[in-house]
Amino acid sequence: MGKATLLENAYYKWLKEELIFSDIEDGYVSISSPFVDTNFDNINLYAKFLNEDNIEVSDFGYTIFNLEEAGVHLDKRSKVAWRIYNTALADFGITREGDSLLIRTSLDNFAIAKNRLIQAIMRINDISYLSKGNVKEAFNDLIESFLIKEKVLYTPNVEIPNENGASSHFDFSIPSRTGVERLIKTSARPNDPNYAKVFNYDVKATAPSRNAKFIYVLNNVTHKTTINQNIVGTALSGLKPNLAEVARFSEIEKDNTLLVNS
Image 1 (cartoon, rainbow, N blue to C red):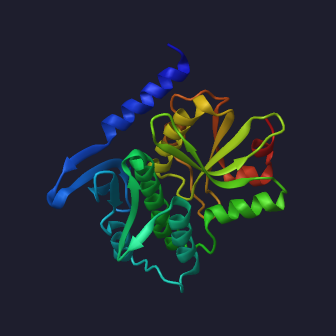
Image 2 (image 1 turned 180 degrees about the vertical axis):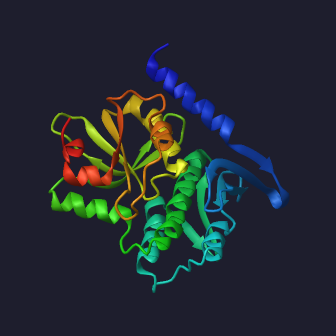
């Protein structure tokens, strides 16, 4: 059995074991994910068949509720929070109805839709972390400004379908003259295990079909935080050293060769 197959099998095993589906009232199915919210509770989604072929997946309003409980109110007066919130909805194709974040999809695209909603919730949860530090600019905005200043060609918000019917989302793709693409995932909360897990499994799911180097960029600029080495270990677990790297943004600001060279 090849190493690529071993990684794929490990990825599918993780997906099967870590997602718990339960029938609840009114025809809904509760989906417990391995990722945690701002209260360190598992992020739960709720799915319901609209008809034989179409499904609605929702957070039942818990994401907005948790932010408001933390004193964060989403309105245009909070420019950074409002921008992160609306960008997340647009990037992942999420609709807000009342306080619920939801996505409607076909049964065939359910896995993709579920992943999109989870990643949108994680991105919106960043608002609570950034607000505590009175941050004036979103982390991805900082990276984008840096790439523009350095005249690095890039594509934002790349979604790559996987063989298991799901998809992986990367914040930036940077082409290379050698053909080895840079696929970048960022974390505004550098010590959040959620993003480290997602990076690790997205690399394992994407690497077999993509000629790329994967880079996990941590925010150590807007918050002067010591990076927990367990986070680095989680992000790179089971990955070859030449396949993926973890980098602090301050390091990239000093030397961008990790992004533009092979």
